[in-house]
Image (cartoon, rainbow, N blue to C red; front, side):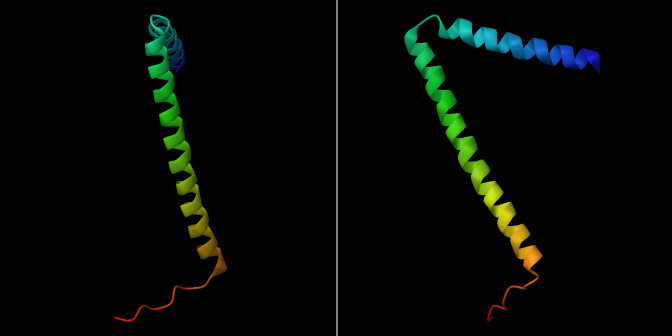
Length: 73
């Protein structure tokens, strides 16, 4: 278990150092990495909010005890 934690920490630190090294080469590269990070963050927040909303609506519907009305065929 200790080996896994140490390896994970080393890989994470190594990845951060590698991204920092690559970003320091050229300002254009740094701006591309930053814009990619911003796009990913916005997408994660948006889909996370949608998921939490769907879970909340499902729980609310389940706790209210009301059944959905029958749909005419």
